Image (tube, rainbow, N blue to C red; front, side, top):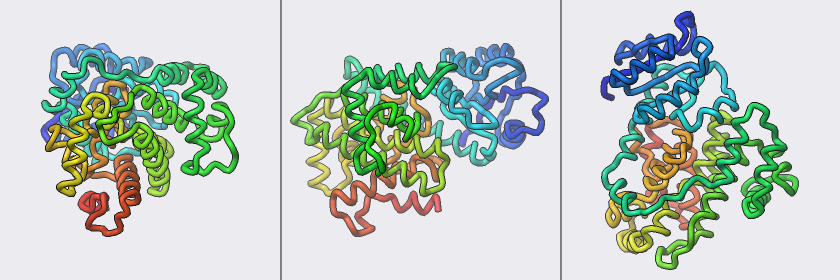
Length: 383
């Protein structure tokens, strides 16, 4: 990895914290700058090239989120991390738009370096020239579902409650119907019939329902194309399967609750790029399907031959504009070939890739390991 300029913003008295340890360790190989005042850090960002900013949630009484918001608005190319000794869901909700990742005190220096490498790798992937050439031909990209934005606004309030969250959802009748359909399907294995958004939030939790709202909202924004070789219904059904499977796999792999919920959302959104191609590039998608069958190669490889990029890259770029978490964005372009990640880790990408591969193999009656969609090279790397 290139030599990085990393700005650390935390209280000078915190000499025994994990953040201070990160600063000391990373300083052995990178240009690490420690600043204790928000004002000084703001001036430095204006005058010096900074690659990464990591700050505490509270810096001498000032908000770390507000500082990262400033960085986001003034130097959006900087990789941004928010550090806390605990996983505070309220802080996660409030900071989602402005940071790449939220890290806690159990993050080791070598693990953090790996996260930085993967974050920069994703940034380079989304800056691909061919990707932007394709996007420039689209007059207007889809925007985040209105109900999802309302839900996130509710979650960022100081007095957020489960009932208020449910009230936001139930105002959209079609989204409510979709959510209840998913929750009561076999994929979630609920022992009781879920009858309302409030019931769903109480049983599954806010994070799971948030993922369901996003997915249901996304699929309502795209129209059918008879020329693409796909239907919205088929993509939706597969997305629900992959999302639910990824959630179960993340849990089985011992991931934290936060990661299991991120795996659910990433899995349910893994095919958003196909929706974009279906609506805006149906002919290229149709030709890719034909080429995939003729050459007996994966669809994403056929897409690269026909279109220059895969649908997964398109989906990741769109969701990056919507401000989704780094772990979710990373899983999308890498769920086909996860071995392309700079530093393979057992994380959300792992769960989504395996969920996608298992679903693909099952639907195509693939039993031979040599023909499986599971990336053996990636599995070997992560152990």
